[in-house]
Amino acid sequence: MIETQLARKTTYLLIGLALLFTLGQPARAQDTSEPSGVTIHIVQDGDTLESIAESYGTTIQAIQQANALEDPRDIFVGQRLVIPVSITHIAAPSSQPTIMAGLADTLTALAIRYGTTPEQLGQSNRIVNPARLYAGQTITVPSTNPTGIARLGKNDSFWNIALSANANAVALATINNIANPFAIMPGNILVLPDDTTPSTGSPPYPWDTIVLHPLPLEPGQTGGIRITTSMPGTISATFLSCDLQFMSQETGHTAVFGIDRWTAPGLYPLTIDFQDEAGTTWAYNRDVLIVEGNYPREQIQVSEETGAVLNDAQSVQEEADYIAQKMSGFTPQQYWDGLFLLPVAGVPTSPFGAVRTYKGNEAVSFHTGTDLAIKTGTPFYAPADGIVVDTGWLDIRGYITLIDHGAGVYTGYWHQASIMVKIGDQVTAGQQIGTVGSTGLSTAAHLHWEMRVAGIQVDPMQWVREVFP
Image (cartoon, rainbow, N blue to C red; front, side, top):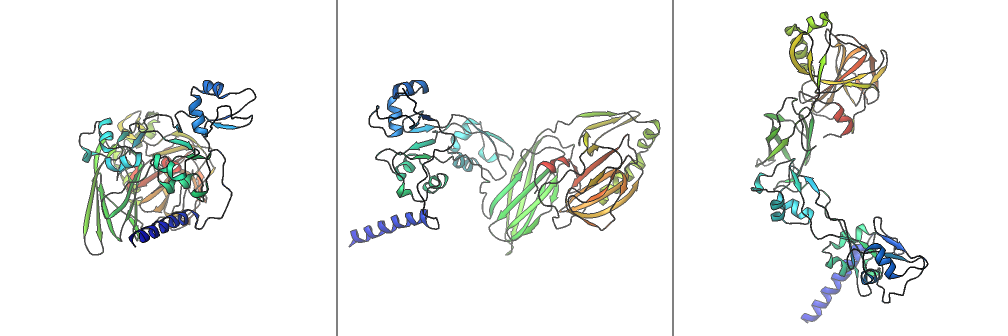
């Protein structure tokens, strides 16, 4: 009776495995094409296994076993032979990849992801205290047993290969486009799974994922954070002595924040708190690395009249305070979608963050936006959807336009020749909003493009290259 039940269970298990791979997939002929990246030798007239082995630095026996050849003379012109580095398995090149630790990563999570052990990672990277792993830390992954491809021998099966390669059977079938593992024949080539695909890691309950990007962070740049939780609730976080403001929908939470241009390199604590609907609170803490920004220096030559205006500290500060007030606040809606567009196809003449000194003015400042030089009268466009929050004239900045893109993200445009929108207008990406000029304190025709995130001046060009949050 017990033996009958055991046999029945075994039968159900095999049927279940078969259904796992065949359910929902159309019947098809077995794909026997070779995977890319595999060394294949096409037999030419006059080739022998000995000459082939010698040319590739391997052995006759290795080629025989990799191709399930019983007789070394049993080859023919046009035949495709797998050229192995080792018996049966063709190894991937040995290397020690360098990775960046994410916000939710631990040595244990990294070890599982990259097929090694926490002890090996700690020893290779001289990590004394695993609890002090920080986001943005560079980690070298020690070499492990290489995997690459395998060819089924005469007595091999899909399951033998999966077991011998310590590979997940579902992953092995998926990457080889195998509909039915029971139907593959001896001689077929299998690509072995690569376990080095990065993932976000799984921090402690109730966090499902916590992703911070880009890593490492830099002064004057934007950071984005995406969190998923196992239940709905409220997220709050503190970084660089500022409270982050999140947009939440069910169990998804996102935020963007700016890093002040003068922030010194170093480790800074990030604290995240989550409160579920029952009032239970969890906290997650991790140090985050900020590296040097390496900004250039500029000395600007200005006229005596312009220098006099810049030396009027009160006027300069009043205008700066006005802009800061207009480009602050948090609209709990994200208007933009994807990458920002360049507002105009001008020549970048002065980047964000450049340290500036002005002749006749002892003050040291930094360039708060990106200058795009192009002739007066050239149309320029909204880089993303948003709402116009201010337009008008300022003595230093000339004609200006300010746009709220939601979620604490604002852009500004200085030195315009003309303004084509008004306060309250909803604009879309690619819509003309003005023309380029040289109004205010400007030495030549250009568009000054500025951005603030959570009230912090940041490099707008980063948003052209990277999607936030």
